[in-house]
Length: 331
Image (cartoon, rainbow, N blue to C red):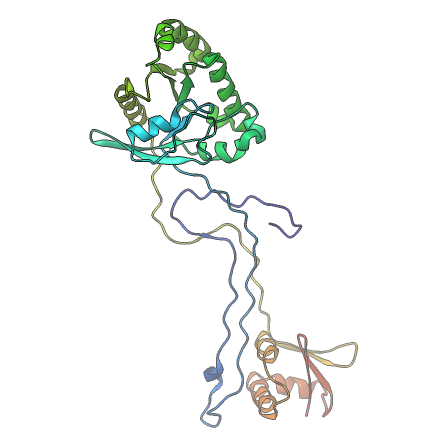
């Protein structure tokens, strides 16, 4: 969140590389830094600088090779439970799954991560049916398995609806490769319309290059063939490597404070204004009611030449010296 209180995009973190979002303040010198042979117990210490403060709004997007998309109750949970060790909840009512489920699928010597995205409704890109919550996780998938309910009133219309929602939410998602899968092949009605439905779906798919597969997630028919198709499709797709450089990369940079020479000037109110980063940090946490502290502050001013500059500027006993917001009386 920026200084105006508005949300500002900072970064998309997709690797283990750290990101620097706020700069901590420099630490101050402790008491021992001011010890001398004649001052074995210094009472001075520098206050550390305040660090930056940032209010961050984090949005989690799960990573998976394959995103399993469908309308509610199409059989996604049954499929991911069958082909992986994921413990997806299965029941015969819509929205049984209310959060993404990840499962590792092993096919021969190959394995990939499949993510079940909760059922999508028309208007999901506008947040209907928690569409935003679900679609944002699907953004990371390399390949989509678009599952259709073979017993739906119109599977082709369902196919078009899901793709329209992807396009409205994020055009890049709509352009990712898909495998179109019609579920419930074990039902006679679906098996009998397999040829006709394939022709209609291929017409709807057009030149997108997607293929159509029929399976039964309940009996496992066609699932092994589908998993082989997924492995083949993933093998042809580039996989981004994870960056291993662990050097923090700043998301922003703040102007470095320029440290000029120490100076003394006379303020309008007659006070002697001392511009010295070191003295400002010392006086900020010093107990100026303690005479020992005042003596040690005076010694530090002598070391840096500030005391001589104040004397040259005409300071007299009882005059006020200002270090930032702290005022002391010259003695």
